[in-house]
Amino acid sequence: MPIAQRPARKKDIRQENEKLILEAAEKVFAEAGFGGATMQLIADVAGLPKANLHYYFPTKESLYRQVVQNIFQVWLQAADIFDAAPGPAEGIGAYIDAKMEISRRHPAGSKVWASEVMHRAPVIQDYLENTLKDWTDGRMAVIQRWIDAGLMDPINPRHLLYMLWATTQHYADFGHQIETLNNGKPLSDKDWAEAKVSVKEIILKGIGVVPVGKNTG
Amino acid sequence: MPIAQRPARKKDIRQENEKLILEAAEKVFAEAGFGGATMQLIADVAGLPKANLHYYFPTKESLYRQVVQNIFQVWLQAADIFDAAPGPAEGIGAYIDAKMEISRRHPAGSKVWASEVMHRAPVIQDYLENTLKDWTDGRMAVIQRWIDAGLMDPINPRHLLYMLWATTQHYADFGHQIETLNNGKPLSDKDWAEAKVSVKEIILKGIGVVPVGKNTG
DNA sequence: GTCTATATAAGGATAGAC
DNA sequence: GTCTATCCTTATATAGAC
Image: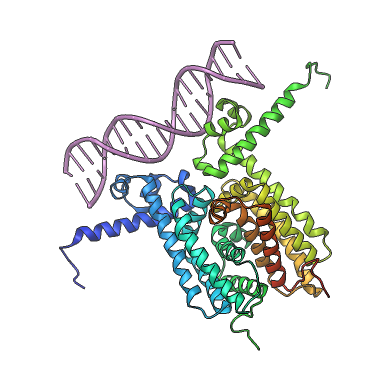
């Protein structure tokens, strides 16, 4: 841990500044939308002059694209849990937990994604058509195998996935509404735990699966 | 009344033009967001000169506010079904059907609402705090009564409501994503029916209720 | 009540000094 | 690699003729 390191600075500065800019951009894009966000505001939040943003990211759109791509990576990581599971109780239960945790820790990212999709995905349509399509098909196949093995009810795997996405992301995308209905206070640890349990209980029971840890048989 | 305006035209013209403008605005706000929408584009879609918009709606924000308020009324109408029902099988089942139908027929409205909430409700915060809060409290009480009467499992009424909103509105707000995953084609009548049935089956079973029409006991 | 032309402001992007 | 000053486009809003 050399304190005053002279060499190899440029790369560090670039990394550091890009990180600052991307974090600020995610926040601003989430709160104002693509059209409502201004490079000036992003620069202010990042604590850098506006011109520096254009040095690291040529256009507003290129910056935005990077933000959306980062979010997508976070989504995909939650998928690993799905594949590692022996059955729906563990796989879907853990997936709900993971997605809820992302909604809690990464709400801005979820909002940017939602906004992008609502506006017909002008920037990341290729991701939807390829990466997301492949991921969805793969997970539908996993669910179908669980159904065929008699581990859960014969529900429609596609609509189950949509329900999982909708329900978990709702806590991020509509976090402001939820907070307002919570008398203006952010959800407490207890509230979040209650939310997770509620979602898991209803969905797992709804597809004919006994939650892990509640299996009394 | 005794004013001698030949044919009472003025009022008709105003009504007609306001309707044109509001429909166009809803579409444009949904697709571009508040910041991305332009008065010029709304005017083009409405088939009117831009200046006319400013005649009927002084500012972009006043037009937007009216659009959001209209959507909110549509949401509230779906609530009536809830109250008229004798129990959760009918009440929640019909509410899901109604909300799914709104998502299908009124997707732009749902998107504008979602966008407004995601951006911390700058325009309709008072609606969230009053009308929506009251509605939510009332419906939670209804659900609690059903639980107390042994008509459904003792789930958390609040999180059940969030799940209902999330799941049904997902089909409007993320319609583009769903369409992309449907190989770029809009959902057919059959697809929508399948979606409704899936949502109802999973949620109703998940809360310990047998769907109406499937009650074999 | 309608519409053209325009004032005024704001934002994205860049040039060029340091 | 950093940042000030500025260009240029676009958008909201209005004035004023018809």
